[in-house]
Image (cartoon, rainbow over all chains, first blue to last red):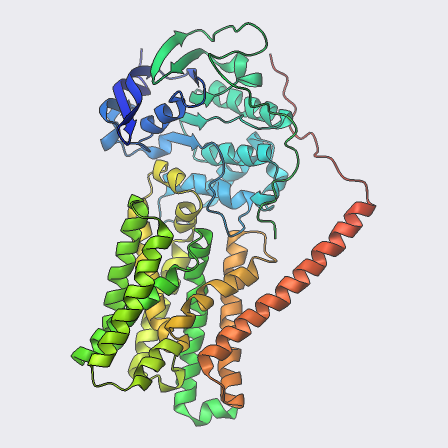
Length: 253
Length: 291
């Protein structure tokens, strides 16, 4: 067995003295597709944010590709897909410009983009089915298409590990399918995936292991739990991914 | 036009205004993207304290202002990134503290109230050759930095957490932006004055984004608009004998109104034609069979 891609040992995270995660341990090895499931407020998003170093650990340790996270510098090996497009977008940006940000981890701050960078951006856009939208402002895309833009941004860096935070929440069915296809191609290419989900939908057949977070601890680690009924992660409430095809158009002025 | 070539001071005013007109929106676009459009005003008020200190100590007011504004900008950035105080509260403290400190220090010095006015409202026509060199060097430095680091600064302003996970030096880039804002504010102070600085950084960007689709095109258009407003503003000031700073800003706002009206008209027209046509559904570009 190769060394784990992610190793979380006895991690604890608290906000303002309130414990969000307690004594959480988790190992993800190369080629796995691990889903972190749980109710709203269970701490599942905090878990992956702690893995990425976006929230500080109160105790325990996180190791990425065999390196302690504090000393980890090979960020180009990780592609992060946040829950939604950052709110700080008062200025229009095209889909292509957002996806091109995904190359920065590889090319650094100072080197201008080269042909390989442009090709990687184009390939990532094709992988999520947005090749024809590269020149469109992201604000005119539907919620699902914006989410696909974010996965394309992560894929553009050609990472070995994808970390996704609720990639399918509030996403239309067509985008969920496109999403599942892109994720499967990534796994088939040897990639490792850690994703937080509320409900799995079309991603379910891809998941090799499920981790259920409940009240700040891991209460299940193994096969995807077979729920009674359509979908039943413990204590979840439904965020139904219907009808979000209307363009978001927030800043399309 | 002859006016500019007959009088050196008019030529200096024009060149200074053009450099600032080009550099201010190149930096301002990042502030607008981050929704910190008014931060330039706050930093400008701190710069005024620097001007007061410079006049009092008989040092170059512009250089002392650069130092004061840079320190202020770094403090704002640290407060913002720590999230201890809300951004608008921190701004309020700077606005009032900066302007009160400036007025008090200028009062203590033997400078006339006219010199305070020059910094409050701009005084392009008194640009000395030494001032012009300061404006030129700093303005070009800002311009080159903002253009060369566009992808990285765009990433940080667009999605700071993603930039951190990309391994970008987020804190260094944020501080660079803060210092760049301070420098831009201080050189623009000569042209349009402390009270009008944000206008040159923000209004051309707001105008450009009425019609542009991407970040780069917005930046290019905003710089062109800034250049136009600065050049035309100085020309109007020279021919109609108006205050140069106010002329530049009013032209920038005038362009905003014209472009906004045209864009609204175009949208209304397009909506009407779209209603007439059958709405086009999203093409099924990606078919996936789940196995």
